[in-house]
Amino acid sequence: MPKYVFVTGGVVSSVGKGIVAASLGLLLKTRGLRIALMKLDPYINVDPGTMNPYEHGEVFVTDDGAETDLDLGHYQRFTGVKLSQKSNVTTGGIYNAVIQKERRGEYLGKTVQVIPHITDEIKRRIRMLTAEEEEETDVAIIEIGGTVGDIESLPFLEAIRQFHLDVGRQDCCTIHVTLLPYVEAAGELKTKPTQHSVRALRDIGITPNVIICRTGNLRLSAGERQKIAMFSNVSEESIIGAEDISPIYAIPLNFQQQGLDQTVLKILDLQPGDGDLREWREMVDRIESLKKHVRIAAIGKYVSHDDAYKSIHEALVHAGVYSDCRIDLDWVDSEQLETGAFDPNTLSNYDGVIICPGFGRRGIEGKIEAVRCIREGGIPFLGICLGMQIAVIELARNVLGLSEANSTEFDPETPQPVISLLSEQRGVREMGGTMRLGAYRCDLNHGAKAHAAYGVDVVYERHRHRYEFNNQYRERLENEANMIVSGVHTRDGHELVEIMELRDHPWFCASQFHPEFTSMPLKPQPLFREFVRAALKHREEHRRD
Ligand code: GLN
Image (cartoon, rainbow, N blue to C red; front, side, top):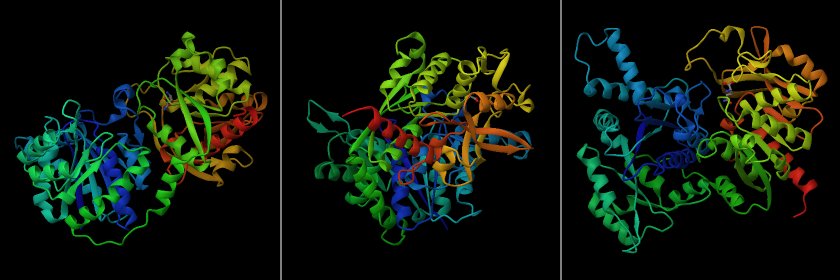
């Protein structure tokens, strides 16, 4: 029988519950336990797929094509566990399922209510996570989005209260993550909001077993620990301090030092082995003492939101650790390339440039111009999804001379649609559900840089896009523009171009998939790894510092 850990948040939002869940996942997995992770999100959107990255940050895609919250990215990077449709459930998704059941008459004429119908559906989803299909789970870690006290999270908390009764309290552990604000005038961290937040949780019928306190750049003192323990009715060893720590991969080490895993195991009455975090610790040490550095520019539309390209940022860090180099990353707003606020020619000051994924026509012309500068300047380039489409448009326009080449996403009437919908997609108007989502097989062509990077013939990488490379232009681009198609997905006898690169360039690789979603700190994604290596080489050859 699996055991369950619930992670709730109090006092403020963005308190770091996702990293807590991911860190505990790593600590338990390292001890040999089989873990599963899940996030319950209290918003009404059925999934975050349609949400604006400016507001919500990145959409993280799983192998089976779920568009999920970016916290799942942390889960995967910290633990490497397989995430799926089951790993992220929203209020919208729950209501959707309940309403569909009601329409099918499955509630047999009953009045459908939050309790028990919504809460039952939430509990069903939690159980589905640990249903033994492929692998058994020892501990399921379930993060509840939002903050205790919000109207939206109430049904989830109520479901969890019931869940404790259903499976037995001894099999459940609740970790409450809060913030201790620092009040300048008093010169101390304040515990009162945490006390109130624990009380709010208790009002709902949930008593936290562990409290993790965010303390900014201060350390939790023994006095504060005692005070919180007493007021919250939690033992002192179960109060864990969480000061701001960088890099984020050092956070689990801090938790381990304070015995978080041991406390949780005691509560759940589990006695696994000790676990060895040596490799992880070495990786953290390496991040803290990187000897070299490279300057990378990442061009995107949503650069003003810190988390809009979270996985790309992390994938670069992983690749940097591999090459012992710090990544000095500048985010470039693609619109500024168009308005002239950022001169694309200055990209030659960078050792490598990434063009990020994106939707919509805003900033597109600026990105095309950027690719021209990168291509002509011999600067290492990694194009991701839209980044590959832009690279193709640029080649078609500036090398083949197809001056009106475009994607039909940006110009539906273009006479030279080098990127377009597949014929079977045309006529589908609805936004959600028309995308190529999730992992697809990609066959790599021998002799190309992508093949050398991966070192295997077949890979599976994750997609999230609607438009595709138009094969009508393939031959010309290959014969006249030095383009190599280095990876393809074959479907019904047709090849979909998954990776393209340039023959006469130090490192110019672009993929229709999102390589950032599979990168791990101890196992950098191959395209990112080789991109950073190429950037390092470029720096060594072109700059003296
Ligand atoms: N907008 C492009 C498409 O739908 C690219 C999407 C992306 O970069 N994720 O095909």
